[in-house]
Image 1 (tube, rainbow, N blue to C red):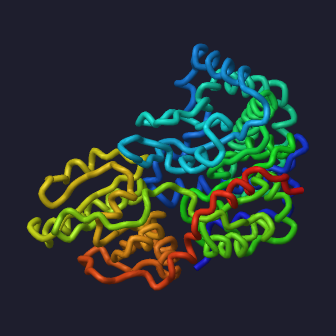
Image 2: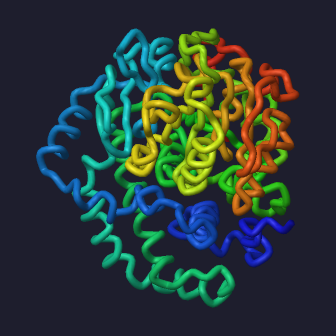
Image 3: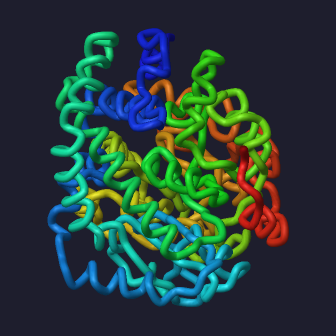
Length: 456
């Protein structure tokens, strides 16, 4: 089956057509093309996920007080810190305290006092180590820089946009969309460059490069080593990471907006990324499973068979329909179904089918839930891989409109197929060794990856 996301590279014949202001933006436009396709092919692809990095999403945060506090913090920092650019609403509970699941071990290794932490927006829960600054705090300067660039670069942007539309009409971009992408990119670039330069940052660790193109370019231009850490599963069909048929002339231009290095959980993910060609083999390193998960041990207190279902925003309807099906088939005396919503979801629809007899909705950290589960079910969540470390039955709930993603996970061997009209059974484990996917955590190895020289 043809990969619709890779059509971009059959349409575009010259990556240098995307050079603007001495930087090649082909990666940014490929990712924008991919996002637009997702909007068309995934009707329930959440609007707040699609637009979370846009000026529209930040406009409600225009605040002089927040801007003043953020800039005051920056001005008071010592030089030589590490910069952590993380994600919102990603938690782990440790001894009844809430931490960021991704940076818990990072801050322990480097020392919280040596790390400046940034997120785009504030968390729904209060974490023990709050971020120091947020992108939303800088909504005012981003707004004014965009206005300035729109006027000052008007002719330049107009020529660039007109040329792209003329040469690549099949991409479906309008001149307005291209102009908006360019202005948004450079406004954030100038902001990030100012922040990083003022802080005199030693090195950077970030998550999710495809939402941070401007940030990555600012790091590159300032010569700051920039490490991306894997934050979810990176399948062979992941359009933002893997482009297996990428032509050689696109490789270096695409990498201009990538981090210097990416650290992955284990060899499986490294193999995927190298085959995907966006990153060179020298850029991909095994970092090990650096997330804090409370250790691997079973902690079952309920004698009933516990079925854990981890959800995603794109498949909420199918999950709800499947849980309704289970309510008809299972007995609350012998079974228990736990729905663990994705952090970005509105959980009200799940709460509507909760009965606290058979079906429960729990928003706690997933690792605690995995310790007490007998069966895990998801459509294509990262948890399908993490679940193989907990010695339980693991299933891909097969949804036809996500057949591409579901088949990718099934081919990896970590889970079995479960149709929407089937009940799960105990005892079916993935066929692969967990170490292939999740190498052991090594603090010294991770420290050396964080504090290193940048790629050339």
